[in-house]
Image (tube, rainbow, N blue to C red; front, side, top):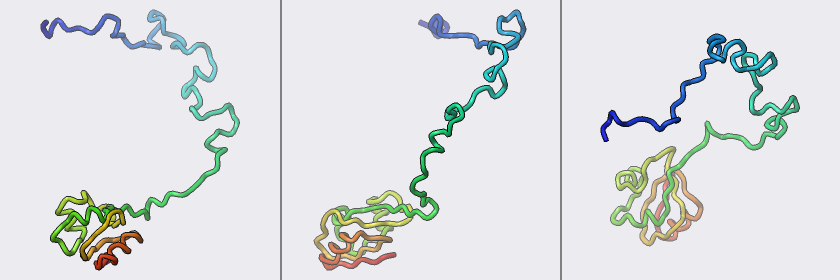
Length: 147
């Protein structure tokens, strides 16, 4: 088989329907839209939410909640179990975690969560701590500093 022998399957290719190009084409005069009426006009039909004039569903349902987008903080999170794996480092900072590839990016800050245990005392500097993380860090004799 050669490249010049390749062809699309029979019946898979169609010429586009050219409407409004004269009576001889079979699609002239009304351009396949019938006679008069809303669907024959420019801008034709109502949108998908139109319900025949009754109040549409998206206007009948109440608004709920709020979006806190401009003030939202998105923290990179890390658990105490991941911090415990870092041996021979006494001061844990976001920069140290980035260098050791424990976290991928900082986003708006670093938050330490309390899943896992730490056995040695260390200083952990982060932008936020969960309550359980603070208890476990203090129980191990470590310090937590909020940046």
